[in-house]
Image 1: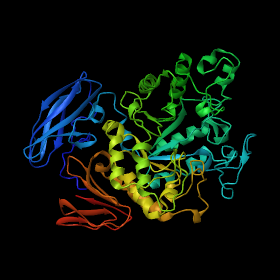
Image 2: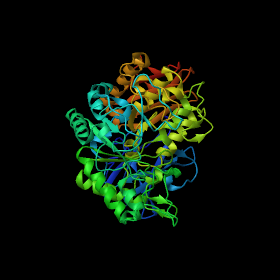
Image 3: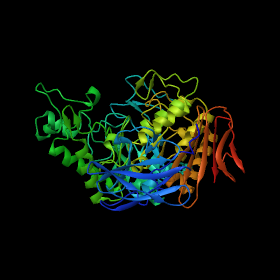
Image 4: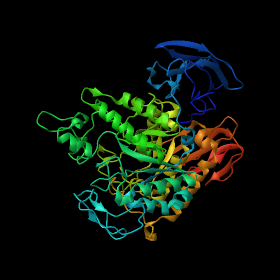
Length: 583
């Protein structure tokens, strides 16, 4: 399906004069229109009531209008009229020929914008126990000691959370050259607080760093080394629960004032995350929870540049209680007072859109709008995973049209700011490895190309740049193969490095608009465009398909796995392949 002849608008600077307006500020919005359009009005919802604002011609193929950011979230869409066809609506979900609800309208968001550095971030996810090791350590009493290069990770036995490989924070510091060479500039560090597990989501305290990782001093050394390179460090915090041996919960069981911080029943039972007894759920209706968790998050901002909030979608929610919107706004307000340049990002494994653009979370881990669609498009023939990131029945195979429809549907229900500051990921330490899903280096590179070139913040799970495999998140937690060259796909690393360097070098890939040009079963083609003309054409194919003729003319200069093209543009259809040209 060819799409270049459709009206287009998004929240990028090419189309919106100010993507982070102050309340009541005037903003110019532009829309690209095809030949034959006779008039365009902007429908703006003001205090719940739609009004229509006329547009004016803004050069060949463009219209513009001025609207006001009257509400904290001001919704708008375009009513496009033609002489030879019925009028259509243009919303963030695309062009529709019938009336639709406001949920997919474009959004002007007057909440405080995310920090500027986050728009250029490339994130690298690290699991402390499995990334780098500086010394041999005695395993704690709860743990099963394992050899870094000889023992297999167990992922479906009682030993799974107990295997202790002995990674530490100084081991991460020692390998910063690798992360920086890949092209990442932000490290997302999984939990570091003491806990009786290797994942550390069942913390015993939030007041100090686990001595097994090197303690507070090692985290400070890592932070100093990261910042000396001009990089950023993001921490991981569990706002939904703590460990059952956490000092707060121990006091709660002993009937101290901390009891109000949890959900106890009359018999002394308590609510826990997914019913797991070691993870008692925090009650955000308690002023003590709000005070103490806020203090924790502020305290560590001396070493961290922000937080990724674990299970953010469940935080503050239990039965009739729903404190989530209040919690995220209050946390963001408190964090901004101490560190205006700090990031607050939510973990969310399904539909996060209802929790965004509220003045709280500044983005999400976009599994619903990126990971799942890409898995379904690029899954290999041998993929036999038992579920689809929690959905029973394995990973489905979907067409390019279905994949883009899913991406657009989720993107349409959040602001451009929330989309571009959300982390796009192929995999993580909570999912199967993407190499296991797609089954080949070629398809893995196509997925990584989409990660590097679509709007959003790329997040790389440590080891994916070497093509590591794993059936589930726990299996993905394989120790890094620093001394196992046979386990590393070095060609994959070099290709990922080129793609991330391309993203860092090209403003269009970080801040440009997204315009879909062609969507076929096996091919996706899109443009990333900027106001100064620095635009790129991207082509991804999962299998051989017919050459793709576009209503564009050259010259195009290849910048990634592409030869130059001139004249009428016909893109090659061989695949799996990923190509980028400069317009």
